[in-house]
Length: 111
Image (cartoon, rainbow, N blue to C red):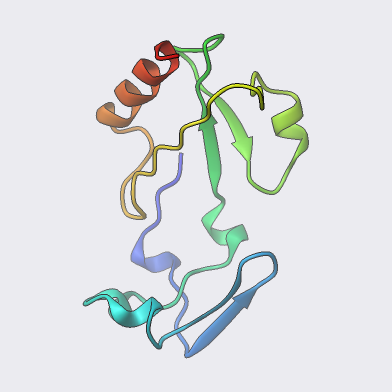
């Protein structure tokens, strides 16, 4: 479950992360009102992004997949030959919100 708060933002004019590139406090990153108040994005290690995988085989309990560890995909029920949908909750919300869980469970029933 990912929950990002303003405390996970990094102050400064520019920050760069391997695999993701660079972000600055210039547009387009700071082009949204209020975003410049939060600072630049924190490092991937600080954010600790996880993907919660629901499949036909595990509709009730998700499997946690790490964005930086491909072996977690290989050890999961993920199948590349099936349609994949991503539900993105926004950076201040958590993945444990009831509407997200409902959408994920319903999505596994749709062919």
